[in-house]
Image 1: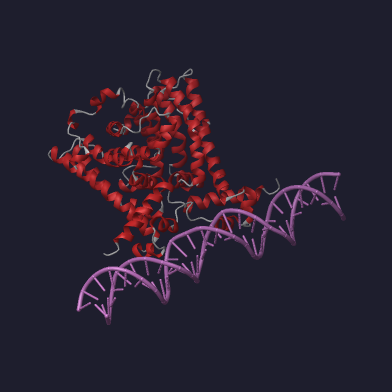
Image 2: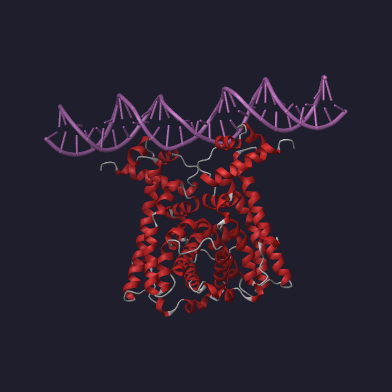
Length: 230
Length: 230
DNA sequence: GATAGTTTCATACAACTGTTTGAATTGCAA
DNA sequence: TTGCAATTCAAACAGTTGTATGAAACTATC
């Protein structure tokens, strides 16, 4: 109890350095130097480097998931057990997007750390992400309630694409900003969330009845290339 | 000239090991053991480990980009200089998706290597990816020709989301398969490409006239949460 | 204020890393 | 065959890494 100070100094220093320089080239010695503690303190307090990283990620990750479930719960209560589908997507992509994007977040260590974690995907973090499935199932369940009768596979694809767009926007915000030469405003987080949600909602209708594929792939496409054309 | 054999043995061994175990825990010694060559051969033929990885990635990456541009060119010729928007997206996402997904590709070292490269994003690979911007600009230009008058930012967002969905599907195919308990068929590559393309096309209309935001965020959402609610 | 338990510290450890070296070998041209 | 360059090889290098150790310093309890 006495020396929570060392523990949290390590956590803060590690998060800052990982956020700034990535997991690849930050050593325990860098961390303890930044934290002004002894090298052995990391193993004493956390057991190993990987466990330190895991604790760092779990903390932030749990916070995001809590926000998500809170929003989801409120939306379902408001809808009498059935949240509108866009509210479900807002709950899913809003917290991570707001957590990682936006001008005020630019200086946030936590935000930059989570972006790093999203980009680099080091083993201890990957292990944690793999347990995220249970969390996502709650959203699938909510989607099922919201759109009863909808094919389950469609719901999974919808969730998948929603995560694709939010994660990819977080991961590649720099590149998109550079590619678009500033024409995509990555500081207007609300607009981004709106955009991701509305596309996600539309995506849910994309694969409707696979047999109807031709309706979403218009005649203009009849000449779609196959491999042997190349 | 005489010993291209050593060079290509190294390339093949490296690609296989990286594909199997990731960049994180494959050392030069692992590679030369697999290739049955001397340790110094890597530095002799490639200069450094990073240059070896770069050559590996550049080769596969160039092939994909060539396929993309071929398809794009053919589509534009067929349309008399203006390819239909969905054909542009097919050219963009088809090659990487076909290259990395599908049952036949399961055993393909190249496919698994590219998936790894997409997941782990090691420095030499990141450096190459950053130069991909020029390549993407060609697709933006094609989109501009296809949809004249459309706001440029919309085109960038459309391209961004298309890449988001294709990359994320490649990266997380395992997770999606597990989450959906097999209900999402990740072996039917054509269906996946169709799905990504159709959502991408729809996405292009999502942010139309930002002022119209309320039309894609219906009344049911007026109670959307803000941070202080949590 | 002695004691037991916790925390800090300097230091060493052991292993692994990519890279370099210089000699040996090979292959080819004259 | 001789000579020269390209290639291979074993070995060592120089540096870094996460972790372990055992003594020292501290803290709180009795």
